[in-house]
Amino acid sequence: MFKFNKMLDLPPQLQWKYADEPELLGWTIRARNYNTFVANCMFAFMSALAALATYFVDSVTSLDENYTWRIFINLGYFIFLISIVLSMTHQRMNYAYRLTQSGLEYCEWKEPAKWVLPFLKWFTGITAIIFIFLATIDPTFLIGALIGPGGMGLMYLSMANSKGFQSLHTEYHHYFIHWNQLTNITIATNRDMVELEFKFPEKNTNDMLSGSQYVFFQRRTKEQVVDFIKAHLPSSVPCVIGKVDVLN
Image (cartoon, rainbow, N blue to C red; front, side, top):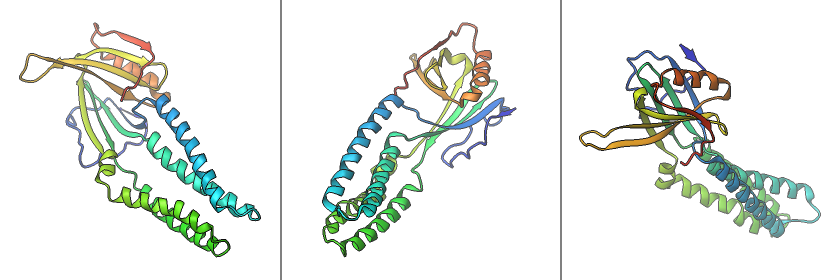
């Protein structure tokens, strides 16, 4: 019935398991599914280290009479380092939600960004050419070439050939929660999301499985999503408003 934005195509590894049920509400979003305060603090710390690294490169390669090149090189090197830091501290997960009369079904996935390795490769090559050219003016730029483009090249090779890097940036998950399995919902005041707590019997045992899932959405659709979920909650399930600490 409602489409909040253009739906992302599910990757081949995922598919809707309840596709035969009519979709009453659906949307997709790219969200930071972790503690953003910690990530932002880490970004600030790594940015300071990037600034120190840039200062070090400048100190061993600078030519006092050529401020234009110094600014160009230092700015480019700092932007490159910050881009790498951002790719680590501000990653986002892809979410596709599908709400039906039976419950909430959603898929989440993360795949390595296709632009990272080509960007790193070309940036390394271009930077190396610039440093080699500058080395014809002053041989000390060869030291900068080893520290800057040389380090970038090693990073590119390690990322391109690392199975650990690929697996770290690859995830595929599918979930379905029946409305009658919910035990509590919390409407977050600090982020655009809802935390759903659930409990259901584990198959072939007498144990009960419990946990929580996060539902992310755009701020402009918050009222619609929350009203829909509340309308399908069992009468005994409490709905509270408060701060939600994402612990992933």
